Amino acid sequence: MGEPVRSLERYKAPAEVLKAMAHPLRLCILMALYEQEGTSVTALRDQMRAPQSTVSQQLGILRRAGLVSAERTGKLVSYRIADSNIRGIVAIMMRLMLEEE
Image (cartoon, rainbow, N blue to C red; front, top):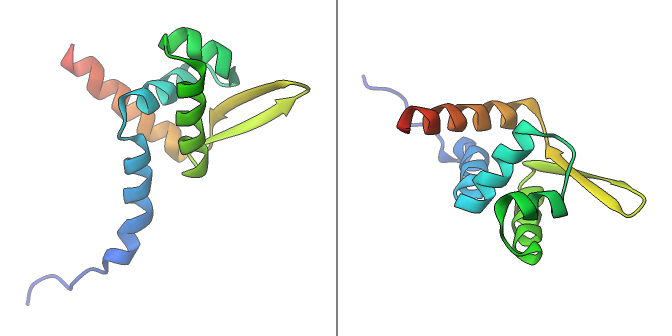
């Protein structure tokens, strides 16, 4: 007999992670956070050369998807990649992009 039918349910969470990453600015943000953890929205805005509201909106999507976390110190909010699994995915994406150059 062939392989057993796989439940699509187990693929929903990984698909949501990939969907959250599937935007050029969000991927750029993740790569910036990979290179420098604990980065503020202002620093990301300057790196991306995008309006702060746009960067904030994309960070919100990444936070809700569980890809980044935020830490508040006074008025400053620093962002970082949420865990080592996401860091690994971002590292793979960075390697793929380097291969294309």
